[in-house]
Image (cartoon, rainbow, N blue to C red):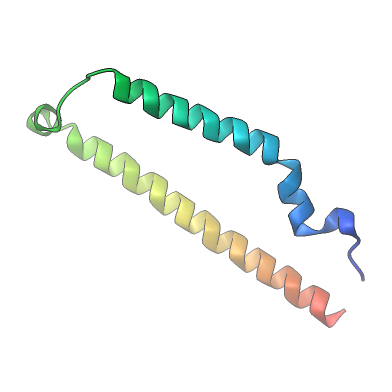
Length: 86
């Protein structure tokens, strides 16, 4: 079975570029707004124990992204093997 260009993996990425660009823009905007506000110092966050919540959430997000990337890599590898054998 041959894959046509519409099924190619890069075409799938190109279709979502607008969504990704908007998401990245929103994330940059959120970071800029957070930095513009002089919220709390890390010492204050550490003193009330919230720094561990921030570290935990960051760790969960990074682990989720790592697992997603590994899963995606395995799926792409399977597709490449299947296409190579056909």
